[in-house]
Image 1 (cartoon, rainbow, N blue to C red):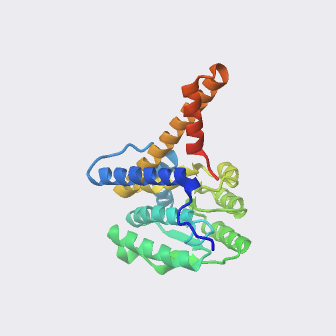
Image 2 (cartoon, one colour):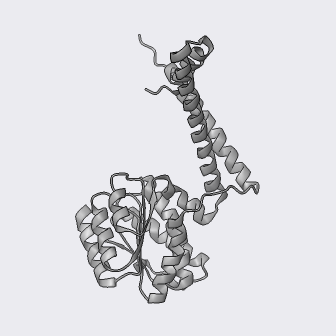
Image 3 (cartoon, rainbow, N blue to C red):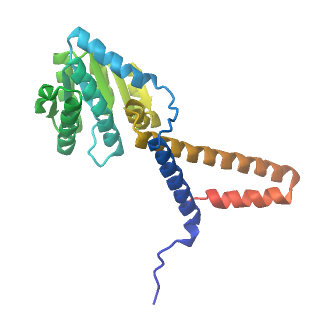
Length: 272
């Protein structure tokens, strides 16, 4: 009769990295909550958000916000909603009209709650309306066609495309470009980045998109999480560098200690 093992002995290195990253992230969060301030590299695209909302307000034109085309189970959608909270606060304070079309019912409900809280925090709860967020269609190109039409009619002063995008990205971004809107985009979908870079004024690339919410809010939990993740990246980079140097030394001199260290690093960084 076969026995089931709860532990995979061959995955000990993954368990080790899990423990290290947990300690690093939790430690950095604790330090941030204790008052330590971590340096966050300035992101021009994030700094431009406030400027383009102010520009749209001066022009008397609305701001379009699109949180991608995925549901709440997508981490990019969650990151976009975190940014939406700050955008909602800005538009509430400047009394600028915000328009947010969505293609998922759960995103619709979540975005309404986020904006309701944002307008209340800005001291303008009366400025909130459920009409700020509308459901369009869960069909990919049906959604894109409807949003294109809305942009063409409303002539927004700013478009924020922040989330998970696919083939519809260029259709929407080009419509905003033709309407004369200043556009900020952000996504972790590498195959859509070239299109967004071509059609938008500012782009958050990859991890910059996830860091934007921490940059905007300064929340200790978010900032601490970023610092903990950076620590793990530095650690892996250092291990790879040491491993590469040991490999070169072994190939050239066949020095035994370098060979032992090289094999140990290979086992540590091995994945299955």
